[in-house]
Amino acid sequence: MTKKEERLQKQQKKLQEELIRLDGMKHYERMYQSYGILCGIDEVGRGPLAGPVVASAVILSEDIEILYLNDSKKLTQRRRELLYDEIMEKALAVGVGVISHQRIDEINILQATYEAMQEAVAKLAIVPDVLLNDAVTIPKLTQKQVPIVKGDAKSISIAAASIIAKVTRDRMMEAYDSKYPGYHFASNKGYGSKVHIEAIKELGPCEIHRRTFLRNILEEKTDDDK
Image (cartoon, rainbow, N blue to C red; front, top):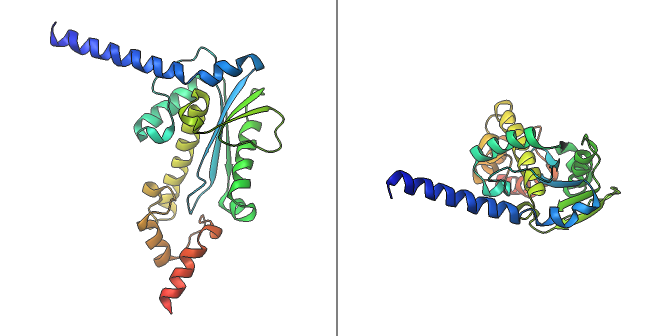
């Protein structure tokens, strides 16, 4: 066997393994497809000190094939960007909900996350019958809901939603980086990295910081000043 033939054989093997993995991620879709139209829902941004929480709702066709679809946290930024474009092109419907830092401070992060998910579902061009959620049950929605722990790694619909939400929020935080220089939002995406926390202590919070998330940090700064 030539090197070219070996290389092709390895590529074919990897492709077959990927197709098997993706088929396994359709388990919940197959389980609930008799109920009607399925929608995967996920969010990103519950933990950061700054910026919004973003949720996405995605409806995929039963026969869809998007290679390398997976939990967004397991993918490189480049892969997420490519998959974002492919999902937006191939999905039957995509909805995105964005809840601001002000609203998070007003009602708390859990309720803000629910609002983002409700908004994402409301923005779908197709009304789903079943919601496959990443580990939560969303209030005020009438559809049947299936909370799946670590669902973004177990369901292609939730994985697709996790990618849309992640890329959407990352792009927002990268845009904020130029508007609020000094906090390194392009790299930390608002999460509490050491550099980010040091910047908050030095510069104080900026407009998009979640004040309810900064109490301990600002208290530490006050104590240091004494």
